[in-house]
Image 1 (cartoon, rainbow over the protein chains, first blue to last red):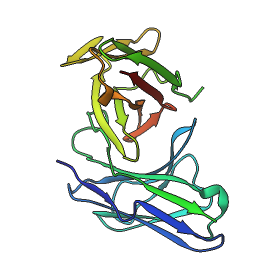
Image 2 (image 1 turned 90 degrees about the vertical axis):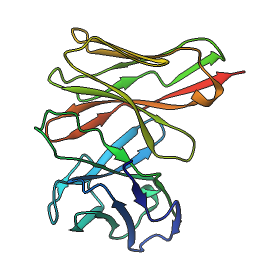
Image 3 (image 1 turned 45 degrees about the horizontal axis):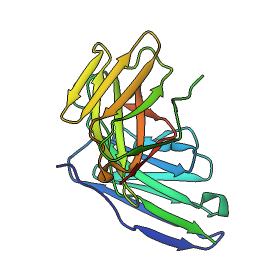
Length: 117
Length: 110
């Protein structure tokens, strides 16, 4: 089974702090994704990465950056945390095997519930 | 538009069937997915359907796809209290991306 592990289930930080959320997958997946989940809005894509050292902006990248130094690890960085970044953050990974149209479901971690005070 | 739309809430009695509906926007989506999220957990892949199919059955789950209307549904037969969760539909976009609906909260009353 695919295992996507997020380093923290719950995190409390202060406004202005630099925050790191870590995600590791053990299936040698090429693709990794960071989402935030807010009630009534579903999942919104923040950033994603197709390969080591590659990153692409998702739908809501403002206030965030990412790092993919190793294939199995994808980090989300809040450069200067603000209260409107209080949310549930979900990491996912998927394989690149096959064509871009082949079945490549994303596999999710358990999420990090981040509170910014 | 860009949105995948779902009804926000569904309440059923234990043993009844549940039907969760979803409309999507991109007619070129190749796969459509249903994910389940239990309280405090991440998303678990439930099932998926390829866009050239109109039905897929997997034990208690039946997925129906109406490609003309861009309508997807998930039917859960004999709904149990353990089925209480949030259900998300998602469509594929080019580049391995998924676009999710806002989720449907399913509440099962015993």
